[in-house]
Image 1 (cartoon, rainbow, N blue to C red):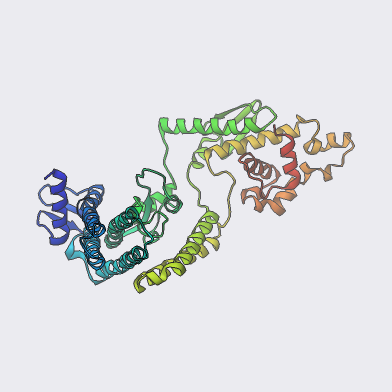
Image 2: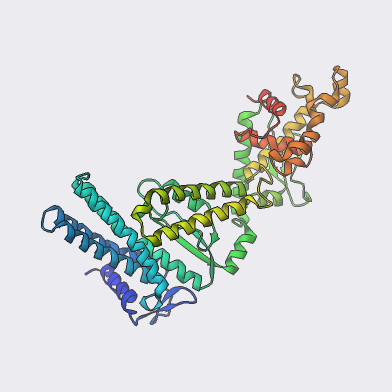
Length: 464
């Protein structure tokens, strides 16, 4: 017997019998070794929980299924024995996630029972397909194997309950290691970052990868959540900050150079004497305000994306419920309906937010560089770099060319910003110059929606 076997056996005892060498700290939602007094890492607990499935549930299901395929046992025996293995796997996983048998209450066992009814429904569907002759032996074994992966969801279900009791308030989904690619659902879940506890389905539920899911969950308390919200991203300092700034400058400048006919010039990060100016466009280049530049490295809340993503999740779940409810238990249906209503509520909350829209088209440090280059491009227009586009020349020069300045685009930008700037972003409504830079940022990033059609034509004329 290997060390891993001993650890797995020991964890089984921990979950099922409250083995006295370990104790559950409900305030931390963690296991503690009573001898060393050290907290057992969450990664270790999850891995050992998975080991139980790998060393017991999976081989047992494979062995029982092979006996059925070889004709050694009948269909009814096969179903009964698989159901027992599935039940044991879910029960053990839930107890491990919850903190041991003594931590389990009626509600916990009810959740396990609800999951099991769904698993039994899938097992019954598999039996019907086998009876109909729709599956090969290899397909039967693969479908049966997936049933062995289900207990992982039971672990996170129970783990979330334990974390909530420990006053954790937020959770997030993290992508696990996979041999191929992650499904789009899991990538969407991970992209949402930290959300209120209970927001996400446990790994393996409501995702295309289903029981193949290798994602995991993390939880955090109120103090840590408030600190994270205050930072709204990663705090960059020292050499790491300088490196990130330089990369952003290079990428942003390169994007502009690839599209702009004029002289891009140089871009540097200035000092902290710039007093709130985002950037200064001068002779031959741009000087960026380091404080504002750093702030753009922090993620801005995008309520439009949040609304669309959550509404899409609601619609997909609605379709799944309608298509699969005949195979589900009533508990599963009720839980799914509850998640569906929760998604709709979250979508409406995002839509009704006062920030439902973009504050700026600059989402990253790279975009800040492009925005400031937009002011540089505007300066080129005003100084007459492009002889065939007099729209932005000073009124006196426009009159000398026989033009009416009031009818030229440059003079109308302030009005456009005021009346239609919100189609781009809130910041676009500031004035004509900021509207130009905001529109330029969007254009360089390959997007044109919301840009004034006449200005868009100008952008096309000055592009390579």
